[in-house]
Image 1: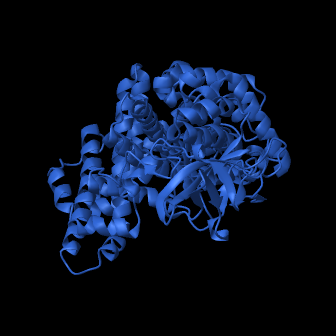
Image 2: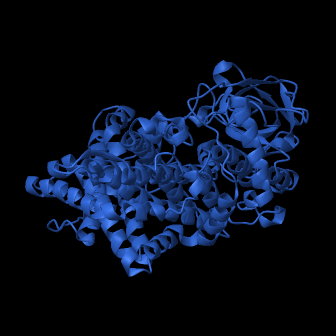
Length: 619
């Protein structure tokens, strides 16, 4: 019976891309796991690059590329394949993401036929290893103000790094393997800059030597992900032809005439960034996979490790029988399930929006906002959960051979790459405040000042219906959904009223927004909490097995009540819970932990992680 429940849970977790997930697991099971925890960086990098070549042989890197150029046209499937790489060496996942997600994705999404025909096949086969050169030492989140320049003269572009603050930094594939880079730079014609655009710039020749005018430096050892060759790039008078401009959204004619179907420099820039959202979705999924791996290791340990005998008995107690240990692992496991269903919905949204025959601009903006929020919450959850599992495994969990220290180190940077999480939650809130209008992703001081000055807040308040919350029913799913929706709407409406009131005064609009930043972040988080719960409910509804659905419902109860417990200060302050009900929430979380304790192994087994990726001396 338990095995049937595991299979039913795996089926609903695998979702729309179940067949592909099954194929990927079979390949992973048949592949010998290459340990990396005791490798020096150079050996680790060489191993990861060889593993990239092995991935090419499977054909999976073709998934997200257009069929016309040898791909398979399955955008969602490509993200799923990155997710499953997250069960193994995360350096491989990141390196693959740089090559086929960021570098290849930029060529596909920002280029046109001339770039696709020339580059995509070689990118898919790894004959052209590449880099995604956006971040600079002086500009990380504020990529609109990058300072690398691409100046048009004599029929081509000259790429320059004006100073060390403008060097490209932390660039994957740059230190060792990359031969071509998609370089983001300010496009300058005459005395005018047209904003940031992307250019194909060779950085090494076929022998591996830097190209003339290109200087490359290794970033050196990192806290984790040392199988990825992060490097720095400087450009001094590097000439590239006019055709090097990835020209889906703008072009420059031979005579230097600039044209674009999008007249606004700002809107063009954020449209370009939005086209690259796939990387953010992939990071969220890989963080989820790493979290699942850690929890599987932790639950196995907790079911076999014993400490302290019961009074009157010589038999020691299994760790997972302690309520404190259950509380370390089981609410985190419930949240991991919730986020998995949210990720599944996000991947489907990405696939449908980017596969549509015509572009739906509003759907694209909603996708960008959803990806930002889910990525932020999923990566923060990975960081906290892996740490909790490490502590739950004691000193043995600190041994590198037991994988948890490597998972900690490798996932730590997920909270800041592909978007700093604090910035991303502001993007979520701004999307809600502007109803996803043009340039909603612009978080510059000028843009946030305009948001306040234009007094859009009345429209926000008109969109938010008045809600009447029913009396607390702690295990009523309808009440759960109402409570989460009410909190999200109340926080957003309160933020809108706060900004509107300030806008009618003589206060500086940017300072108004800046002073409300804590409120902005809470609005983003509350919205994503609601999105995650709705995704969990939809996942349960898709479950065909009654016994598995019953178990999922109890896991969802634990997710909801543990979230309410963590945020009970807000719910008490705003009259959504009374003190006696808040105390009941704590008691019911305890009761749910005890109830789900016998099912913990079933729940982690349902992730169906190939055995060699979770087998440790911990149990």
